[in-house]
Image (tube, rainbow, N blue to C red; front, side, top):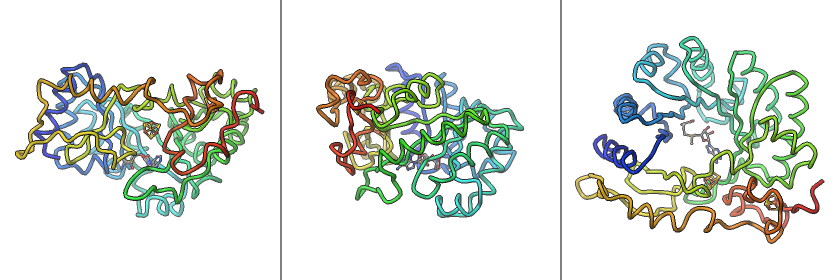
Length: 315
Ligand SMILES: C[S@@+](CC[C@H](N)C(=O)[O-])C[C@H]1O[C@@H](n2cnc3c(N)ncnc32)[C@H](O)[C@@H]1O
Ligand code: SF4
Ligand code: SF4
């Protein structure tokens, strides 16, 4: 993505009211003008969040530079507590660098959190990961759920089914609670899959963050994602759903000073009114607003009929 295009997008989004900009990628720290972009966003008074595999942050100089450039929040992805699991999931020798990056952020007192994607390969290590990060001194430990992202084909190989995910989250609740380890799950699956009594507790204690609170761009219609080719996509997991292209032949942002009209058009297809619940059982469900029926990407891969139990049949 050309830097001038990225800056034009940021300026225009700021002009129409954006508060926050997330650099996610791919791997944003590899972008040649990465620091320039962070700095520019901060100058526009945007909250600048960076989601990273952390590898470059294993160099303390990189972390210091992030701090100097005023980064607002860093999310470091870590998926295992052993080189074996982490490297297997990331398909590269990332473990030692990622752990070093966490230590560096702690040392430099950077505002950061860790992000662990629960999937087929680390499903039995969730407690171990949380405990490990807690012992390192990480204050905000977030787990999200691997969902079938939509690319050329639906990537579902390492995605666990919704009922299994709910069981894992529930089982680990007791383990974390017993040891006083605070973690949170961005749980993008139906709330009717959990034990009802536990559900209330898990939400109240912020152990479980329902999807409506966790921030689904598509449901809230408050955010958009720009890919490197200038396409607007609904969210970063829907890379093949191109809503509109925004670059001209000179790589400039076409909608400078006039994005409102496009935004209005796009929003018509987003948001609560356009949202599709996966089952009829959702219609009169008391958890509807909080649950929003789970991330729709799951339903491209799993049949809601097999998973959505509904309000009446909550266990
Ligand atoms: C797509 S990566 C990009 C940023 C950076 N390269 C990183 O590793 O964090 C951002 C986060 O999305 C997570 N992620 C990737 N594929 C996912 C999927 N199918 N479902 C849920 N999370 C996913 C990754 O584990 C990572 O924490
Ligand atoms: S549709 Fe919503 S919940 Fe699902 S991946 Fe996209 S932003 Fe996240
Ligand atoms: S019935 Fe629908 S809205 Fe209610 S908890 Fe289940 S999936 Fe969510």
